[in-house]
Length: 223
Image 1 (cartoon, rainbow, N blue to C red):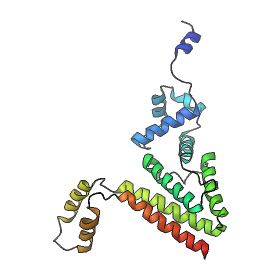
Image 2 (spheres, rainbow, N blue to C red; image 1 turned 90 degrees about the horizontal axis):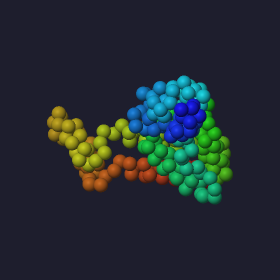
Image 3 (tube, one colour; image 1 turned 180 degrees about the horizontal axis):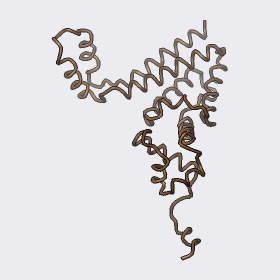
């Protein structure tokens, strides 16, 4: 059989930078970033490891591209929406993205060579705040407090060792068991009377805190 015929029968789509990056994101979502190697991505694509270097320069270039794809998934604060609405939508979108791609939380703001989606995102956030009347100094304050809260909440949410009320109850029992009763009455009240109530979901705390921040920024802008 000729080489041409073999190529025609190959069912695999042609290798591209987009396919390499998407495969890397898929691996990181399922197994984390630590085990991400060019060889592993090549195995996922059924390609030779060296063939990837025609599309990405190295692992750092690959991670830069992965993060740029993620920035493209975040709602941009564009259009005529009020700045508070736009910033709220953007914050919720970023929170949800970090829940989908847990490996990315420490990488989103660390890229020395950001891609176009990364730059477009930051430019749009700054532009929306500037068009609302924030001066450059207030833009810096707003951006800092918003992202500090969003990324901080996402990291805390990832670290909490329970997802359900039953898991929280089991953890509370283990937590208080070694200590005399009533040694920590305030903590016990908080856990039993609030956190362990049916339907409590820590994730819902995010929007309460976000609205406090946005309302505070609105007051600062008006002042």
